[in-house]
Length: 313
Image 1: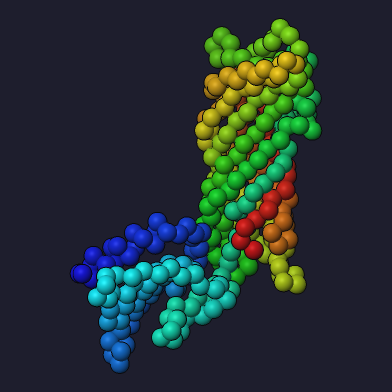
Image 2: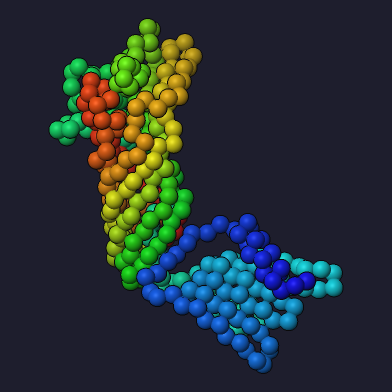
């Protein structure tokens, strides 16, 4: 089997076999190629040990992050084995386990997480109370819940405890109406009240956004964990929206429309936590609805507060 083909196969398998967070440092990344003559071994390291490839006789080892794949050529055909390396380990040249990894001195932010919170919106004069002529937009604050799944993260470290954090996440918001009503997109796209004609058990507007923050995070070591404080801008793009009405009989009606919601929005977010636990808040300076198409022509500015459980401490 040709070496080039093995390397390509190698990379394909490890990408499909593992998923991992990407970590990037502000230090200048370098490429090193070292050849050890005594064992005719070729080693290639890229970017402060982020990616390493080692070839020796009929053995090929590829390591990306703290995941690895070994390939052994034999008369019976190629044999593959996957590896996971401890974050506390260091690289060495031990023949029994060539790849050891050290990440204890690298900056790691706190974005990937599961978040639970409550959402609402403010009027342009920062009031929770909506004008009386759009009273149908009043929310049941205790039942207007949000859920976020932040699933990818990129770290850019300035020091071990200070750096930038960005990534992607999914943001679900549920705006539970307090009155016996829903909303509809009326003439010229302006949001209006929808009278269901009968009593409802509950009614809501639901949205889902893909959001991306750029956070400056500072970590203060305390015992075996860190007190982490982060803040920065956040942007989001709408993926979907719908209203839902549940009648007293138990029947449900959903309406999947855009409801003149802004496709793009941006704002600010801040969070403070210890270890894997955080408290966060997000406020968008972009109105929930498009300009001039909000209920009664008013602008409503969404926000949410809640708790987060991070994955990477």
